[in-house]
Image 1: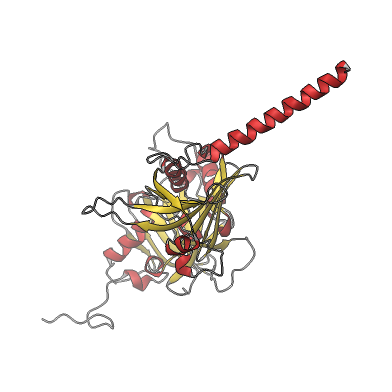
Image 2: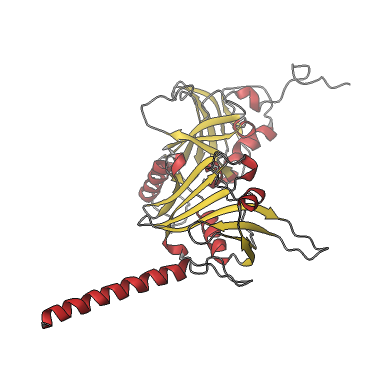
Amino acid sequence: MRSRTFFILVGILVLMAVAGWGLLNRGERERPSTQMGGYLMKNLQVNEIASIVVYGPKGKLTLKKAEGAWVVAERWGYPADFSRIADLLRKLKEVKVGRKFQSSEDVIARLSLADPQDQKASEKERGIRLELFDSKGEKRADLILGKERDADPATGQTGGRYVLRKGVSSDVYLVDWSISGPSEEPSSWLNRELLSVAADDIESIVCLAEEGKTVRYAFARPEKGKAFELKSPKSSGKINTSELDRLSDTLSNFRLSDVASRYEAGRPLEGFDESVRIEYHLYDGNIYRIYPGGQCKDAMCRFRLEVGFRGMEALSEKEDEKAKSPEERAKDAGKLNERLSAWVYVVPGWQHAVFSTELSAFLEKEEGAPGKASKKP
């Protein structure tokens, strides 16, 4: 045998050995522990997961990494709640097996382990399907989540959930499930936090109509720490402090319920009035503009949000010398506006009602006026 042929054969044998080792290693990586108390997915590399797909009775949810950040695909790439995703992946890796048993058609139906896309199965028989992919699109895990089993202290029965591992084993596993959901509803995975602006940091609140040409009302503090006073228009009515407090406090923990769509400047939104806005002017020079948008539908209301900066003249001369310069603050405001103004948000009707665009909402009702009974002498 020629030496060249010999080396070629040796090379082929080496490649076959490496491929065989890789397949065996992959099988070991994916194989769940059959021992009671063992991890269902002990070798799951959570840092390599780049996409999560959830199928359920109400549809499909896709979470994916885009430019290093998690987003919700079914909401036009809106930022997802990273802490919730991290918690899901961490707990999946920590799930332990209580016991296992062979599956059958009857078992799958009874324990709600049918694929949620299986139209032949009843809704009661379908489970939640959870697929995990890496950045190359390789599937790292495929689970069907079935019924939960309640704990019973009287009999010593522990709680848990029945799980199938698609493509790995035909067995059913009872695991110690402590994960909420997961839900296939896109809105439940959104990063709901929008703003956190303390009421004490607000210098004035102004409602503008006709695209800023008309002032419907303006409240301002005479100085920081003082109560708001009505500056425009002139009125002899008494300020309803509770309603005004609601207006000034609402940005302190401002959260969305859902995202209606992306926003494209210059492209009118159907049924959305952009001619009226409420501006919050802060002592640090920032301006938050809320566009209430008019009518609500099914107790859910749309609104838009923008961020601006008033410039150097708006800043106090007594500010800390270590604070950011006006130029830096303007740049920060621009970045925040780029992120927040790109969307049309949804909030419940009760939250939207705080953004009244009429002065009368912030004045005490006169005795005998409609909607309020007169006080008896």
